[in-house]
Image (tube, rainbow, N blue to C red):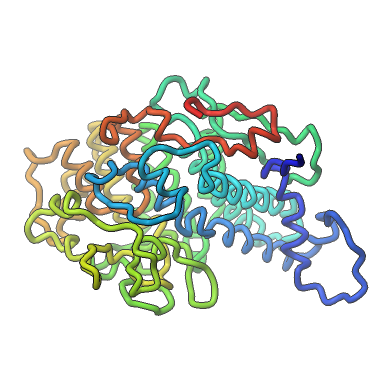
Amino acid sequence: MKTNKSIILASVMSVGLWLTACNNQLDIKPVNSVATSQALSTASDLNALLVGAYDGLGSVNLYGGSLIRDGELLGTVPATGDVLWTGTFVAPQQIYVKNILVNNGQADVTWTDAYRTINICNTVLANLQLAATADQARIEGEAKFIRGSLYFELVRFFAKSWGDGDPNANLGVPIVTTPTTTLDVNSNVPRSTVASVYAQALTDLADAETKLPATNSFFATKGAAGAQLSRIYLQKADYPNAAAAANRVITSKAYQLVAIESVFDTREFQNGVNTNETIFAVQITDQDGTNDLNTFYGSTDEGGRGDIEITDTFLSQFSKGDQRANLFYQDAVGAVRTLKFVNQYGNIQVLRLAEMYLTRAEANFRAGTSVGDTPLNDINLIRTRAGATNLTADQLTLANILKERRLELAFEGTYIHDIKRTKGSVGTLPYNSPKLIFPIPLREITTNPALIQNAGY
């Protein structure tokens, strides 16, 4: 019986196929692979390939849906938590009930799409000389933003959390930083440590922050790299650096908070837009891309499947006057849905300014500092925008800061990661339960003897 090669290897043809799919030659000889030198020879080719990396990042199995959806399903207590899964798809159902099998299809394709996109980034980085000199730093920064972001997401889902034991000994995910062009035994890459993967992501994103421009249309910017850095530092409890990174984004003045009803695109069936609060978003139109959060969170009336309902457990947490409680609606069958993903063609917010204020507030509170502003002022800025009553100094506790973060960022993919970094629990499962970690895909284990499976699988 034949088995497929590891996905770290399987993307060997992706670069050539991406750039030659529209070739009009009639006399084409069959080939099993396309050399990069043949497929990638001009600045236009390199730019097209970079767009391909963005397309990969925004796939339904990455920031186009599943990375965000599964961060919520994994952090929710079944039946009594913030959301109720009513769908029939097996893979997300397993994630929701915390009974993930080793052959879980979602874990498989999340891994697959991430490494395919990483390989595209590696190929872009290996061919920067094709770009005009004036464009090379920006292109390098964009590719490293995408690669660093994906390594961060992979290590968060497929490995033990930073605070669970020794990150210098715990296994993370394989690190590949050069293009995969040959399928052989030398391509069997082992898992690097959690600390090594975090270091790779930090290096990529720090370099991206120095090379990216402040404005870059809807592509990655200096602010996007800084915002992602703040997430990584917060995840590893490096509070001074988390506050500093978030502060750089805030003080850049490139972004501004908008009215709470304007944060998300709540128009139905219209092409999506970004706002002044958007730091980085997956771009969706009626011609390109899929808002897979609408697919699962949206009512069938809005083009979705209606698989995820919002529960009273979550809704009851809003205080009187908090306008964020209005970002919900009841559909025709009586189920409560979030308005955040009501637009089938709405852009998916990956990083936005409100999170930076929340990160700066928490990091400063924990470190006893006031980088940029005091934690109380930052929290009250977010509450004021929402129409909620300001907290007093006596009410400013870590629990209230974390609650504010949950209310503001609900269903945006941060849930399980916040639970893990704060060493909380999901029902009776502690933050470090193997049930809260994805398995290394069975195909990878079967074809790559250098890989070691996670505990519990």
